[in-house]
Each structure stands twice: as C-alpha cells, then as structure tokens.
Image (cartoon, rainbow, N blue to C red; front, top):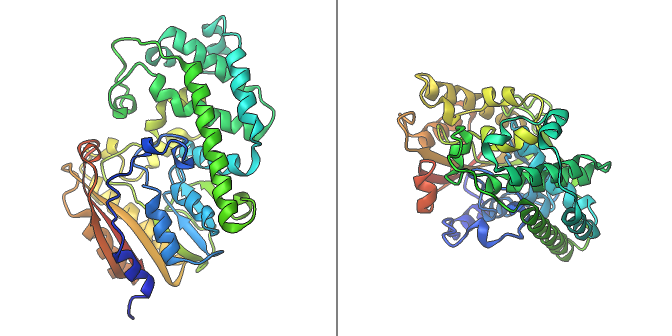
Length: 391
C-alpha cells in the first residue's frame, strides 16, 4: 500500500526546530511546569494535523506532562493520556483544568493574597503536623523554606479542587529554582544535597509564575476560540490516567485512530524521581511503586538485564498499542538512542524491527533530527528519530 499524501507533507518539515527553546516561550501552556525531555510542541502538533482528523482519537501512552494531550485538544481531537508517574499526570490535568475551569480573575487575586500572607512562625511544627518530609531542610535555605511553607499552607486550605490543583502545580514548578542545589536537575534526582544554602525569593517567584500561568491560559483560550469559534472544553473530549502503559486494557480494541508518543530513552532519565522536591511537599500514594515500574529508568542502567528488560517492557507496550489501534491507523514515535553502555544495540532499529516483525506495522517515514548540544551532553542522548508507521 502506498503512503498517503499526508506522509509526503512530513518530508517538507524541518524537524530540528533548532531555534526552539521553552524558555523563549514562557507563556506557552506547555511551559507551565518543567519536566525532563519534553516534546517540542510543534512535533506532536504537526504529526496530529497530518495523520488524523477532527474528533478522531489520539493516544499517548507515555504522556508525561501532557504536550501531546494539549496539542490534540487544541486541534479538536479526542485524547487518552497514560503515564505511570503521578506527578506528571497532575501537571497534565492541571493544564487542562486551568484552561477549561479557572476564571481569569483568579490569577490577579492569587497574586494579591500571596503577597499579603503572614509568614509561618514555626516551620518545624508545620512540617510535622502537615506530614511534610523533613528532607526539605536539606534542600532549601531556612527563609526560603518558610516562604515555601507559607504558600503551601495557603494552597492546601483551598476548597475548590481546580484552584487547589493549579496552586499546587505552580508551586511545584518553581521548587527546582528555589532549591539551593544549583547544578543539573539529576543532582536533585540522585539526592546530591547542596553544600551551600542560598536564599531564593520564593514568594516573588511564585507570583511571577502566577502571571505567566495567567498569560498562557488566556492565550490558549483565545487561540482555540479564534480557530474553532467555540470555548475550549477539553475535559469533555478525553481523559488522562495514572496507569501503566503496559496495561491499557480499559481502552477498547480498534478504537484509537493515532498514537503519538516518545518511549523512555533507555538509561537516560528517572522521571518520577525528577519530581523529588514536589514529592516532599505533595506526596502521592503509590509513588514508590511508580519508581519501581518505570521503563528504561536511568537508575536501572547498571543492571545486567537492563536492555533485555527494556525490550520486554516495550514489547508489552507495543502489544497494547497494536490491539487498540485501528487497522490502517498510524503510530508516530520520537525515539532516542542513549550513549551509555546499556544501549548495547541500536534502540531505534530494535524497536522498529519489533513493530514490523511482531505486530505487522509498516514503516512509512523516518527522519533523524539534530538535538541541541546541551540536550546531547546531558543526560546522554546521541541520536533522535521521528518515525511514522501504519498498522
């Protein structure tokens, strides 16, 4: 079967996006919260536009902080997002809920209220009574921590679920910047505590993040209404679940039109543990189970069976995708080749070969993209490819 014209459109795209940086677009809703190795938003956007139609169902079984989900909703597609990391699911849901549920006036009021808050007088007692992990004292300078706890108290006293959720995510989004560990985020992931405690103006940083969140949500609503001539109501169009991508039995056979996802790059990231600071303040039930279940995790890279475990895990993921994807439906992957010794074979060829040999997928498009030096250097990605296959 020949490739459709939409595939030829993909050939015209410069997939490098060399001039893109999330720091250049702070009011993009996808920049609301930091997350490791996120999609350049244009990648899922272009893939969704070319490979699906309005109201069709898009699945991302490794949805992370929700870039694919947001882009699918922007383009009028229904969506399913799946991720085992509860903190990532919270970020994704907060973005969706904020756009559809939170009034614009909330942001101005939030800034006024936070600036007027009285600081916590007894941080030790507050941490004990609220169940905050005492490890926070190792990451944050004392006055910084007092400001964090003051905002924390303000957030958890909310009665409105959406407002509580959004406040939690905004505070979470600045914790790495408030932390005294100023080296790469993997130092926090690996519990390399700072040697020097540095004050960070958390109250001011939170208020600035509130402003950016307000701008990003207002702009997202305006863009959607301008294009679709209706208000954005993504909560009616899809769902995001905290569950294992190897276990998607709740999705019916042959109901998904398009899968757009980026599987974990073997031995490169620890996604759950990258949210370590958030977990100290807002612990999630089952987060240790999520750490143990993480596919291809960086912390497992020294295991003798790491490559074979990854291969078996991805077989299970692809088996589920093949089941739920419609015949002639598309699977679009962004796949990375790590640099470490654990990558003893070409991961990209291995995964594509598995899809072709075991699940009857046909490769239609493959394009290697250049990644910026900093991303290649840390955390160790050598090659990245965009691949489109058809079931």
